[in-house]
Image 1 (tube, rainbow, N blue to C red):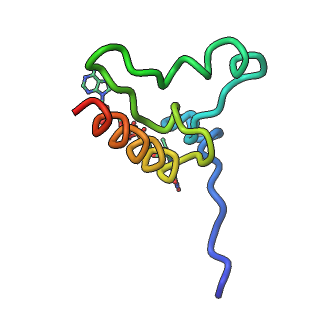
Image 2: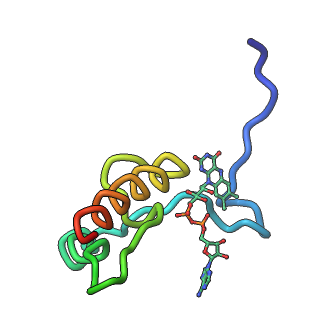
Length: 73
Ligand SMILES: Cc1cc2nc3c(=O)[nH]c(=O)nc-3n(C[C@H](O)[C@H](O)[C@H](O)COP(=O)(O)OP(=O)(O)OC[C@H]3O[C@@H](n4cnc5c(N)ncnc54)[C@H](O)[C@@H]3O)c2cc1C
């Protein structure tokens, strides 16, 4: 395999970042509550993932929400 390039999305003036990360203190303040369903509202998305970040985190959260919806059906 041949090295091609490295991109810093954080230094890209149009992107300003890429992955979602909790800042110090946010885990204990509200991470446990972010993904909790509210009635018939269910919350997916990378920001609510526990294990993975990026697209894998988005898929992890989708997997969790499908289980939550199945439980109330
Ligand atoms: C520049 C960049 C590079 C990245 N590179 C990688 C990579 O190489 N590998 C990797 O795994 N991940 C990468 N990521 C991260 C990856 O794109 C995200 O983790 C992933 O897209 C998160 O998916 P999501 O479904 O949680 O949110 P999103 O993909 O952000 O989807 C949220 C959707 O909700 C819509 N929306 C927002 N508000 C509303 C509203 N009020 N009503 C209706 N719709 C709304 C938005 O338009 C959007 O379509 C990158 C991200 C960026 C920005």
